[in-house]
Length: 133
Image (tube, rainbow, N blue to C red):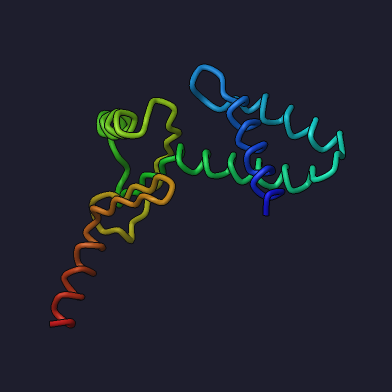
C-alpha cells in the first residue's frame, strides 16, 4: 500500500515539474517519459502509468468540444471561447463540431462537465416528464 502511495506522489511531482508558464509543456512531458522509460529503474512502469494518467486527465480537463446543429458564426465562436476561457482558464483548447441531430442549440463537453442546451435534450426531458408522471 505504501508503495502505491509513493508511486502516486512521485508521479504528481514529475507532473508538476512539466508545467511552464502555467500550462503543461508537451516537450517536458515527452522528456520525462523518455528518461523514465530509459532508466528502467524498479517500479518505472507503475510510475509511467500513473504519470500518463495524470497527463490524460489534465488534457481532458483542458479540452472543450462544442457541438452545434448548424455552423456557428465567427463572432459566436469567439464569444463561446471567451466565456469558457473565463470559466475554465486561458489554456483551454476548443474544437467546434457540427451535429445536425441536436436539432438546435449547443452541447459543450469539458472533461466530465457537460452543458446541454440543445433542442434534442429539451425534447428528451419533456418526454421523460410526460411518461414518468
